[in-house]
Length: 203
Image (tube, rainbow, N blue to C red; front, side, top):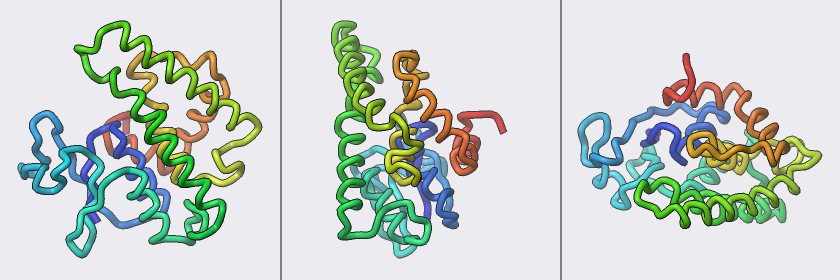
């Protein structure tokens, strides 16, 4: 398999899971502004949507969208226990978390990436994120991971998007539970390896 990624983008979640489950895989960085892969290919020939992640499978198919890729990888290696079994109520809870992270946390950062976003819109986005962080902090209070004592693909996704707070200078001090959670996830060996490989932290 090959993961097309951009350093620190949401593709980091899939990168973490590939390492957590010990998959053999290749990485290819994408220049999103230029629309080119590191090998010089037009990225839209890989993913016509034009964004990461894109996972090239061994049979030549390409899978996109974080929450789908994460579940696909977990199901390829059920022994990794990165997702509850298909058909179980816990699996639907995982899907619920992935949908929440994708639509209510990940997408809420959208206005912050655009340098032309008006300041009032930026502040509204930050306020919305604060409400989402209130909910997440309540859910994580007294537990290590979103599923209690079990790290899942949802944690890989959540830690990726929470990591954007540092870039946007959003202080997590009002949510110490989230700051501690992010530190806990970031300390995992697979997360450290992924971040080093993407140049996000020193080797």
